[in-house]
Length: 416
Image: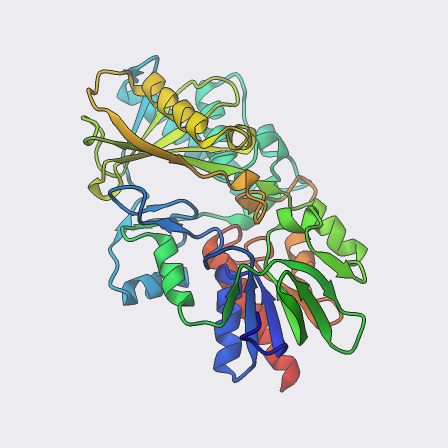
């Protein structure tokens, strides 16, 4: 910290997409800015691992959701990265190691479309997603698991239908061969970021905001907080005075969902699984749904995805145990006739990471306008940004970017 001044126009907490977008906007306007990041890298929950496997893989966010208006799409294109549309990737559904016939597979995919229609047309009082599904129908249960834990990161009994309505469609969805995290890291390169700086307290009782960190004390006119709702709910940062009651209620309505990945690399591609395709059990054990993304961009990787309570439970295991679980689930799904060998694996335990405590925030039933409330400034000087407060592209890295830029714009408008 000693290499930095101790006084700034704005101090930003967190070097994820929101913090980086806010910093760049303010710097372009000639403001003195510093971003404080507790981790040893920038990007937050956008992180491409280019070292562990033979191909780059996103341990965090991977898809450019709503790619036609996602702010990271032109950035990826400007970098010359390879983008691939992924909405029409083929699905293979299995039961007891045997693939279902085409009619049953189509039934499951049609159930997802029908559930999305019920969500978008829902009117009246808020309800949990589970209330829109018939538990007696295997295809509706499968659809509910797909749009609940495997999309929104929470079990369907805890997810607000109105929140999902506000979220809207994620289409079109594109994958990035070089990794979404690489796009974010490129965008943040060269910005004034102090790594390894844990913020312990934000004090706005005086004429300037005082930020106390593991490396010293800073002062600023404004402060933008971009940490996850998991970190805020855990009170890992003290606020003096305490946050308003409305903010605390909003945090209660926006807990962190749990979305995890088991990354498996084989000695060769598994036969019969096209690059970029999906594999899943049609009737998985209760609350143990895992879908598998197979060989993205022709790599030897298979990525198991789990969310909600199951994703959180996996995060309580050691990495080796979680990898064994994911590998076993894949074999249970497709059988063991592929003749390939697992050479390495990894697990993304965002739920147990103290710097995040989850993957992304979801709205609970009855949560109302919690995202908007959480995004409101306190005393016009303390601002909040991130995927949890995004009103566009909410729950995504692109939404976090937009919210950070909007927080910066509000600061600049007040200073004019």
